[in-house]
Length: 336
Image 1 (tube, rainbow, N blue to C red):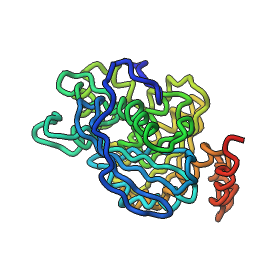
Image 2: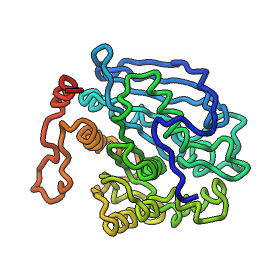
Image 3: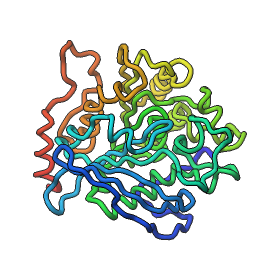
Image 4: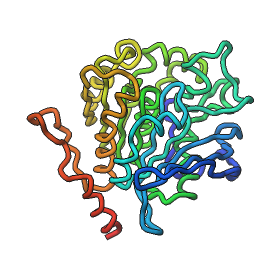
């Protein structure tokens, strides 16, 4: 169980049929770009109909751009981030494509627990591949996020396939970091807002993992950030985490100190910023989303330089070495 991982853009060995049912269902002009919603039939998720959103900055015809995948938290769809995060102005300035999937399989045929709860099942797929009989047909969000959706995006949209990063919030922060660690070298950078860092030791994980993965806790380790950090042997990875000090889930569910300790022991570069007075909401995310996008742009383009020791600088200070407009330099010199 522990060693399972998939590689971005590599065709699945499971023999899935080609994707179908793809169509654009909405498009709106937004901050020098387009926010589009798409629908398609997902083979990875048991042939259910899935929706996802993409922010596409304006670009010269034929140009391809770096992309950042955003993974949302419990109860969310793609619409939460699109409507509340305030990310598109900065993404447009930095010429970053944003890919925003759903958080679980959807549809009347998709199983769930009875009574329904917010922290399991639909809206709470935990970005894993389920192995229990009840859930293994549909709940394969790891395969969906790392194989099927990237292949679909790459085939239909102007994404540089080797310039991809990933970020998320809460359950999605858990998903972003575990996926990056399970696929060394695939994602240029990873960041998270208030991630579930040690789900084997918190109520959300202790509820979800037995239902999705069975009672063998060795299998749970494949989806626990702290355990994956302990086992990591890939190329250097840099992780940015913002955590609100007034988050009501901080002590019981999120446990950022567990991630900090594991990264320090392993020598992984973690920038953990405790943000005084902020909670778990999108008000928190929207306050710092620009920092995260600039962080990813730095790793993806090499134009903006992220300072790993930002907390040692005198205040007020910026951790960026160039203005957002410097991204134009990357566009004009791409491939040179």
